[in-house]
Image 1 (tube, rainbow, N blue to C red):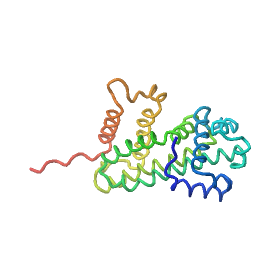
Image 2: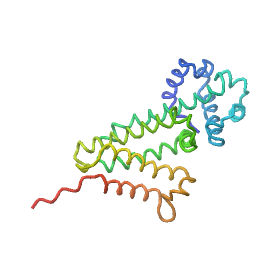
Image 3: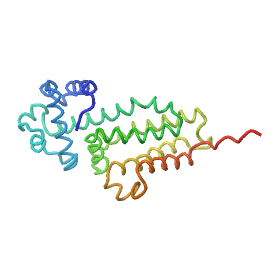
Image 4: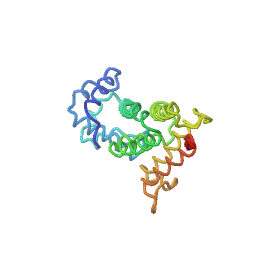
Length: 238
């Protein structure tokens, strides 16, 4: 696992120190040691689920003493709060950073960029993506308000911004139920993207396989969506 640019992570750690989520000792660690600890937390979550994170196992994976870990986080709940907060801030900050740029693109191009860019980011930051996926699909009600919903809200805000701009440009059907369509487009894009990231979901959804590559699946999904929401082409002038 590699953390995103440390210039982006450091303010998050400073903010968490002010909130009492991490200690000053953790903030003063060198980035490589911080990265090792974060990677250990995510690896443990991937192996046993977010709710199944074990402090001793995290310390073993990070190559540090359990006592040292408790010097960085007050307790197991503090360690979990740190992982949740970091994941939410990194994910929502990434989506928010590209929202205006994607919304300015033509509708088809924007939807393709949203899917392809999201998949690329999720593969690059695989530990973040796996941590979130574990929380989203394991159904732990305690993680819904603190992790799943904030990230999903930001994802849906991205889709809404794309559709709002498309409507302003006259790219959407005038009779479209805009609010409902935004929610359904959000859901359909997740149903396409997540199986391409998580093989166990693709066993069920079967989005790709055989001759249908992920690229073909993405293109077909966007074309299918456009057939439902895009304004019909203008009639040729006589």
